[in-house]
Image (cartoon, rainbow, N blue to C red):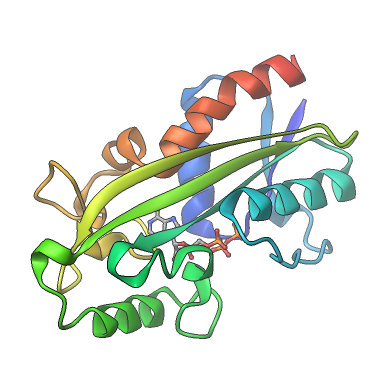
Length: 199
Ligand code: ITT
């Protein structure tokens, strides 16, 4: 069967392909780019799980194929969990990673190292055209650097240093990041569910 990757974020697409291919599912992974006429769904949920389900259902309904979606973000303790579900548009323009990261660093400029705890969160949703749905979550804990470092990954990767590492997520190889990341955890947990429901 065909499994639609219900995301238009290129960074997510490459990570999802690697994570789901390693799970060795018997599916054909097809990006949302194959369906350019399907409009973007409004992310009106108030949680990562709600938004992931909205995206998965929209693509499953529109394509007639099962779809998986990711909703994710960076949650900063000292900001009460912000940017959270607003991570992709923290500085105003959706998907402007550079502006989002700069604004966040400016907001945290006076915060000392011991108060820079943060985590990446990811909700991974599966929806079938008949309305069946599943959602699972993953989390990567770390601390925020004062300046970006590294060129890998996307989004806030250059400033999040996972607990137990001396590098930022942008300094990890793709495989190293996927092995510990919020997205890796969530989609590895979703893989057996995909296998079960899509047989
Ligand atoms: P889709 O809705 O099309 O999937 P999006 O980029 O709009 O793409 P989200 O609404 O889930 O997706 O926003 C996720 C944002 O959170 C993303 O733009 C990054 O800024 C941040 N983010 C999520 N996962 C990340 C990761 O692994 N590394 C760095 N930043 C991440």
